[in-house]
Length: 168
Length: 168
DNA sequence: CCAATGTCAGGTTGACTGATATGC
DNA sequence: CGCATATCAGTCTACCTGACATTG
Image 1 (cartoon, rainbow over the protein chains, first blue to last red):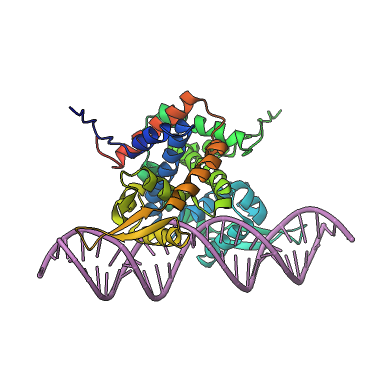
Image 2 (cartoon, rainbow over the protein chains, first blue to last red):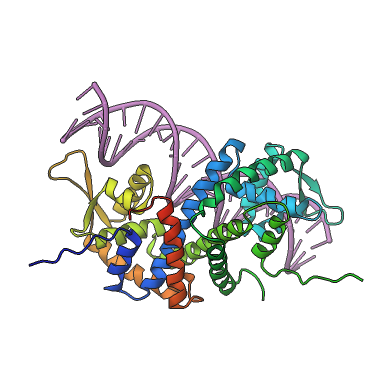
């Protein structure tokens, strides 16, 4: 007589089970797949909150970075470095933000090679409102307690450090 | 006399500090940003391992899904459901895989609306070799212990469950 | 001369919207 | 008829490579 196993309700769990029967690194596979999926969930949630402002997550991050910077402006290259995006992506994102009037390109005082990107008053205003909307979504992470959120951040920090994201 | 604070080596940590001075949800912001970054790291690592096979992560996941399926084939819609991708993305991905000879479209026996996607022998072969390469990368997660990998998977499961990823 | 900075052209990916043909 | 299934056309975002002009 056959014993019917309970169907795995969690598809990642099920994939893990099959993976372990054939290959190594099932735990890594499950964690990696989980992270990929978590990213989709967060991205969808935040993008939805940002849609009324005609902002993507990437552009929103740019605005927040500039708002947090000491003089409300940063060189293009510095932005790419901090946001960890490709130089041409910086150009693209700044193009759009500038088209929306949220930032302005300005020459650098001493180095005429570099272009400074400065957040405008309107940009700050939009950023404030957008942030309210984003905070209201809870980033799709309401299921985690404050302690669990910090656990998550710490675990990812290990990954980031090992991949050379930052010094120390 | 001014006390010079140590510079935050971790940019997410620094963003968190500034965020907390103005808004709520700093812990969520830090966790969300961390996950977004972790996804980039994993994606880059896996894509690099898959490049010699002319596969992206998305297409590779499709191959693995088919290889794991009972008959080596699934309806298009089912694939989209399991991979959590848009129907047109399924069409796109299957187009490419079919062009590479890794899968084949077949009619469904009983329902002539549905198209079955079947992995070919060549597709299985490529999938096996690609998996070796992917496992070798450790998914960019070598920094985490087996226990930490499972912690990560469990934390994300909470997020996924709360967003309706699966039943139970 | 070499390095750094930003831009541009051109190509790829995957996601999306809306419309459509087909079949249940 | 409504609904499900897959496709197609067209658009969008962000990424990448390679080339380039300008400047330090």
